[in-house]
Length: 375
Image (spheres, one colour):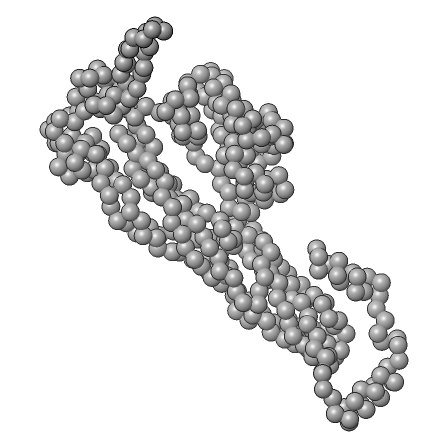
């Protein structure tokens, strides 16, 4: 990632508390200066891609909040990868980012337009997120017509220049009033702004240039995916108009919780139940994790709320370089009913123990454990 060490706010030249409007205006200004259509500087393209990546993050509220709190590492941990920006003409760039042209008007329909994106969703278990898996998504997408190759005209024919607008795609209407002459410009009603018309439509697509197709798409969900994250599959969305690039498919992932386990990023938390005597004497136990049963040793003298940290037994990071920890919280059960003999045995034990065995070091007290729990 080109901007791994550069601050996004610095790249766009805005304050860290800049509103969305300032961020948008800053990127517009840089795009006009750095696009290869305009700039001859040798590093213009690389700087433009840096600015586009910065805008991609700071214009999205969730990504911006993650970046503000955790920086570039936080974005990578949540699966963000910078987009691949096709440096077409400058109008195409403004259309892709802002939905308009360089002059703030609607993009003209006569040229190639990028295809629309497709959204699908999948529900997976925490165990699936622990190991990663492949899912099959059923989608219906527009594909370039194989008969006319997207032109819309029947084989052997071609589109012709619109006789109303002369190929401009827009028409002017002049009206006279007491205040003078008014000129109104609008989209040509004959060609709908394309500048060309189809006299003999393709029989397959009826002149549209695209046909709907049902497809199945295999999408790899990486180990460590978190609830609510999206996976982008580039170029698998709707085909573009008149040779424009296709859109993308976005898979929204819903990770279902597993009973008894709480997830905190890459770390996992669970509870192990032990009796009073097991806590005092120590024992071996087993807890359920997303990958199956996990063994845990309960040391002698375990107190209620004590935590055993099983390092590397948590969720994997998306980049596969590390794993979180599994935090096992002890819940100590004290008997509620005792017969006379049991009560007498406990009383004798208490007399022989005295107060010393109950003392603990200054770092292991109740308030220390309470502080750790909040952390």
